[in-house]
Image (cartoon, rainbow, N blue to C red; front, side):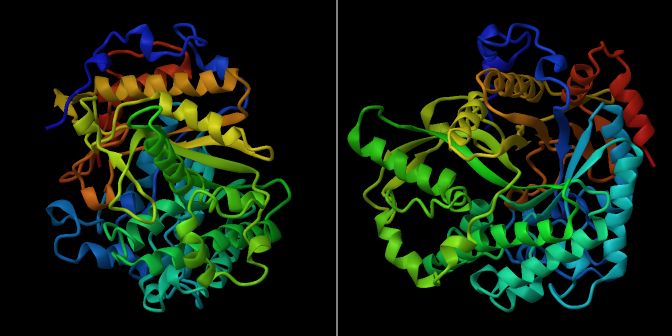
Length: 487
């Protein structure tokens, strides 16, 4: 059962806002040039899984395995963004967004992962970029958001060191075709998630549960993150901005001051928040906190890798949804740390089981900005999943709206304390396929009826629209946009 947090019932209490952001704050407080957007991912939204030469991905394969996805769902149609992207971009434009972040499906462009380019697949992203620009939406293209071509998985996938070259070649294909119009590029989406959940825990594609596969994939993803950046830089205009994105959670000890819980929290931070960040800066892996992994990880490293892992990114995408509480565990000898679920702590939580804790984004912006050579930060994902209630064609979602409002306030708090943060992208533009959770959790600012593919702008989306427009909305705005979106 989902507990709707009492502090999210409107009107919002002042405690949900940082003391440095007086009520009400406005878009103007963030300064000119701040990027306001929403995000999406190919497998979660596009559908058209076998359309016009697209090859299968590991998520096409994983969803066919019994018991991997709640209710046996899959992304073969998803939100049908492939066919309905113009409608969704119209809604994004109508909300007042200035930017739209999306990913390309590697197997739509290169069905075998390498070799011959599928021109019709590449043409789709060509049209998508043009459609964004026609609506004054700046496209932010993520090269890899977890949907590895099946043909490459058959060759070992991320556990095969050759993937560094395969990925670099793919990056070059995308840069050559779209580099004249796409000014912002992200190399990887949350490497710790697709490596950890896919190769150690087995709950995401490709569904492996093997420490060696995890460490190999982690090292190769670290190398690919930097090599992908270099491939883009070699083929993009000097004006292009190149970044990558990191999942992160603000971590606190279960028992503050307790030595073992404090140490466990530092170990968890090294794995969850620092593992892929610090190598890009030339700091190497944070193995001082993870000595048990040192000799295992060294099996996959070669001379010169420390230098190859470094890349001078123009920005980091900070992707944060919650905090985690950590306690010592004697049953996990490599890390000696475990996370205490929000449900066990008696705190409000979302449909994903994540604690409602908007301050986490402020804390992570502060943590990442503390690196001496940290680039500009952007919040490239931030959101919450709550049950939607649709009445009379209106989707009233006060909890999601309040979370969005609070998270934006926490970004302003960090900015006012000197953090160089340049944008906020809500996750997500529309409801979509939420990986192993299927279609149950809904993060979208736009509601999708998956049976009819009808779109309805939620009240959270209407709040974003009002915030970005600095003007009140008519009560009928959400329904008008929903009607316009119908086929």
